[in-house]
Image (tube, rainbow, N blue to C red; front, side):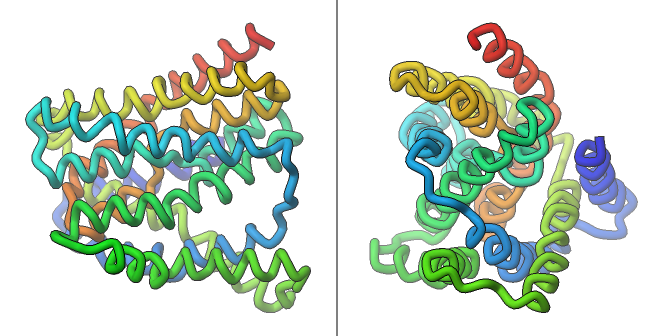
Length: 303
């Protein structure tokens, strides 16, 4: 309930202030910088060193990668056939690739499958979604938004991406067993907690009802992959591998989350269609309430 309230209030305030003319989409840019350069790296440095390596959790880590690669391959030709511009194709692919496995995903996984689901969901988020965002997601944003770039250019942008640098540091801390000093851990916790409300607020600032009505076909295409087809593929892989039921359920639920808010910010930051990206995130948050319940019931029947 707290998560739902925070989503509603944060997005609603952004939309309200845009409606009143107090702020506009351009005002979201400084907040984007804070999210990508401060809040997200802080969250990574806080969470990643605590992860335990467990081969049984490979499916949870692989799920977001399966849906990300699938979206990257399947959606561009379909979107172009539907008449999308290249800026729209990039925004659609980027937001359909990546799910909100952190804020919404962790809470939903715990609510639907209990506290024992949290470590699995965290692996899906950090090793799956976040690593995919920092590599394939960033390469996708740069490729569509940066013009003619070489693989070297994309690689350089990737290693300079603050969350990716934070991930490298966090992995080294975890691998060497180096604890984060208590004072630094407290600071990281406070900075990381600013991620969700600010990121959702920027969604509200960019959310346009006109953009939603004008791009219903593209939204159906992107959200169809994000909420239905992608999780179905992961479920098929899990069944074929005979995965542990809890790992299977959490992997499917995590890959069925609404589009990642940070992916929408990354799309806007690389001059892709920001309104379509915001619509994917905003409409996806609403639509995913129904689809997640459907996956929950389906997985319960198959257990």
